[in-house]
Length: 184
Image 1: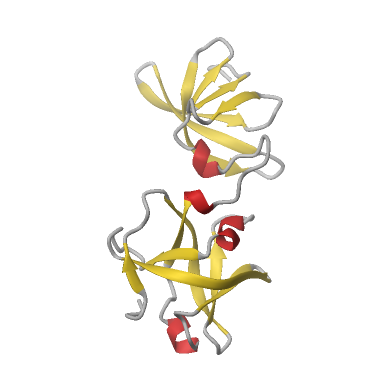
Image 2: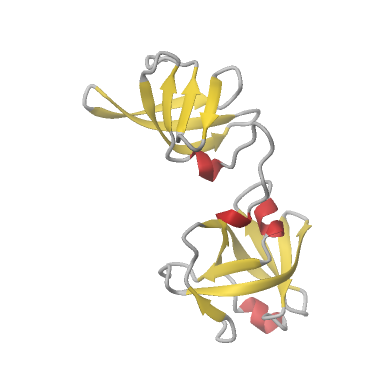
């Protein structure tokens, strides 16, 4: 990492949103490969936290972003702390985190995947189907991947995250209610 960057601990609500791929141009710009097809969090936050691959949370650096914009299949960004190409090259491979609190507000019936992970899922009858372990983009829809237990064994359930099956998402209550049966 760059010694000129301010050392900082990751915020408690830090979410990894991308990785720095390489320098871009000669004036200190750098390419970021976002983890999301809709990387609004990179644009809305003017303060990124960087961490070298494999580093602990206490080995992070704060980076004040001057500008970030879409370019081809990536994001390019610049910072006052990265004055030239050599400094940008030194960032290669760094993981990019932003505080969850700086994400743009989601619209009605829109959710950030990171907010759904860990929520309990029950059906209309109140039967617990599992806990959201991850989400999969399966083309036209997103699918909830649930970790559950049945007959004393760990099982995985998948529920399409579409309005036909999802009745309610209660983020404060950490609960998703679905029209789905355990034996589907």
